[in-house]
Length: 395
View 1 (cartoon, helix red, strand yellow):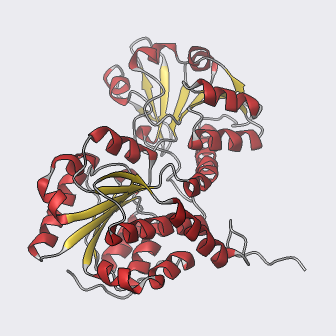
View 2 (spheres, helix red, strand yellow; view 1 turned 90 degrees about the vertical axis):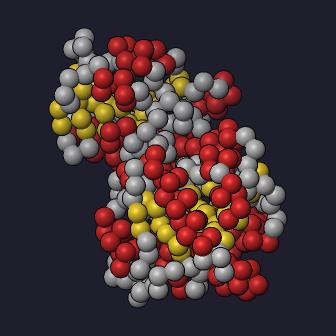
View 3 (cartoon, helix red, strand yellow; view 1 turned 45 degrees about the vertical axis):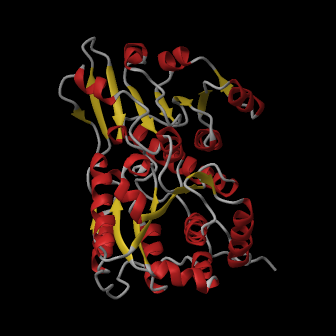
């Protein structure tokens, strides 16, 4: 393992609740210090803060693997300055990089434990014997990752997920706001106003509903759709206008996809409004048929740093934001205090795996652990503004 260097120069983000957890169970921390941690994450400042917290607790971080569409160069640079093996491979190569690192740990007679966002290790956990013998388990935090593990079949290791846990729902409001900030920027770059553009929101789950509420707070004309009737009922009960997807695609000037599986099929491309802006609020590039758009279009025209315009054979123009990858990672998304909440769940998942609380297979983070995390988090932030972390309590 490389020796970690001094804790770097980017402004130090505090994770007080995570730090308390890392100090709270000495016997489990001892086991964690004997285990190599591999992190697959969006390389934002909160991930850097998490790595710093692990280093401060003398927990060995074998590698940090960045998601390419959200890896901030300054964070990559700072992780490298800390002596961390930091890689940003193509998405399809992430499993190979993971295997290489767990094999290195195995040669050093050490076990591995993994935290990830997106289910990139799902096939490894299903069928790779080296992975099953060397990895103590995985902690997954995203719905996309949960679905991928659930579809993989029998798992060779325990996988603890908190994607559908109660504490995770707090994140959706902030992701919704980040999506709307990016959408506002993109529409402005096209000479349009977010307040006067009809916007289709397809997918009314946790993230989609958060986007819809953020759009409504901006006074936007938002229309919603979800394939699940219960979610349509929920949207209507909250006062949102709903319509079938064919109508939305034909009339709305922007479409936000938040289904997690794909909101537009290739055969629907000719039905969208000319000049439509497509923006993803999922955790990967799967909301729109990107390959079909690229195949049926001439060379794209770059309209802004984030928008490319494709002209289909029929002459219809489609504007794609972020190459179809999620738009909420451009800048600020989660406030530090709620990033702290997410990493509390990661550490608690580690503890459960090390204690042997979970058998091979897919598990939700235990409800008792969520209650414990909520108590520690609130004790850490009770005297502050949980959003900005710096309020003064009124007299």
